Image 1 (tube, rainbow, N blue to C red):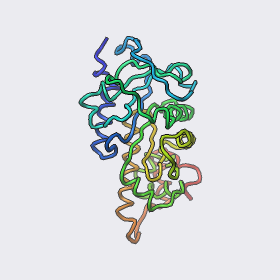
Image 2: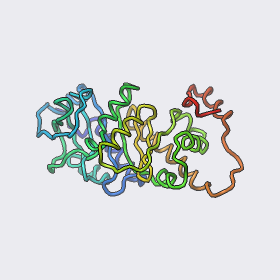
Image 3: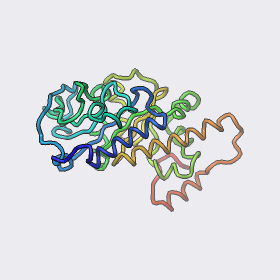
Image 4: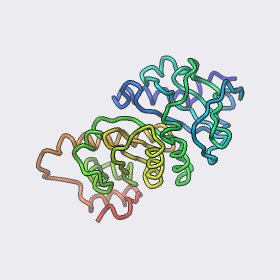
Length: 271
């Protein structure tokens, strides 16, 4: 077997969660990431031996037999680069998604992030895969400016999206499907997980008001970049929201961006 710490997907996961912490998005043990992998990607690094089985607390037959590299519950992102075998785990879902077979990691007896079952993270994977088979990452974090924005901006999804689009020229190009928004809900419940999965059907970014954001993408780079772009736009908004607006990016200009970059803005969001 090859050293699993040299696997490209492992190297990128460690780099990504470290970068998320360095950006200030994942204080303490806040946030979580799961990466859907193909069996062919993991075969050279694990022999299939099951270290232990962990009940997931949910059923998701669509993901039976799927492999996930996932962050651990109660683990600090700042520690992942120093002890990945404790803070990350590689699991294979079985029994219709009701059991996670641990193939590597969580060496201290830990388990996957509580968001894996409680926030229905795999169902968010399933929701995105129904829309785009390339969406293999779900990422949750707490970017400060997006959180701040949910305190002072209407939570209407169209208005929230349009504000972000107007802050940076690249926004409509990076997330033309917009940003969906949930009002404050109790975290760690099936209700917020189901609501997030439903929102994931129409957008790759879902803001939890006064809490954080979920992003989905084809790989770790794209998903990180989605959140990074939305957070930059929110930062600009928070810097200018109290000032008189003299200039903006108009709808006509955003239509020019659509045509030039070959993207299509969410239906009904531009005049």
